[in-house]
Length: 197
Ligand SMILES: Nc1nc2c(c(=O)[nH]1)N[C@H]1C(S)=C(S)[C@@H](COP(=O)(O)O)O[C@H]1N2
Ligand SMILES: [Mo]
Image (cartoon, rainbow, N blue to C red; front, side):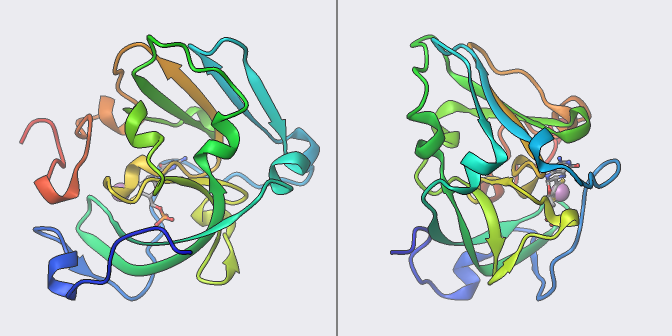
């Protein structure tokens, strides 16, 4: 079963100010991490949880996977419809920890110290997932391999590439782009691009 948006007219699927692209632009700050030893990769859940949890590459790749279908909307005004992904549902990881009741927000931590923030409930939506394959291909290093976050209902900068950490927080804090003027939430349907708008 595919999670994602119901089929709609294309025009109803493109948020204000966005233009469709057939390709897939590569956008990020800094350099692409390359791995030659996957035993050094792990994904860590920490912060306001009863006990921290860390999963190795081998164990992450053995988790059950699902297909997800969605549209993605980048704040730089491109949108890409009809993406089909293979990935791991957020609950496959989050059911290994007890989230403390005071936790309200999440900071996603990527390689090289990059980060992005979002409300806990947006992270836990059943349309959010850890992406491994896109349109039938393994993610390439520049699109976030081995594992990227995908949060399709927010602008694509919230979809951290090269994900390595999930931090549960008791209040909202700005991540990398949010400290540099991007919106704290980033709803594409409300054009929440920059906080100074
Ligand atoms: N780790 C990391 N993830 C990131 C970014 C980044 O700079 N570093 N940029 C974000 C932005 S602004 C966008 S639009 C998307 C782009 O993903 P893509 O290159 O796969 O299209 O990644 C997001 N995830
Ligand atoms: Mo972006």
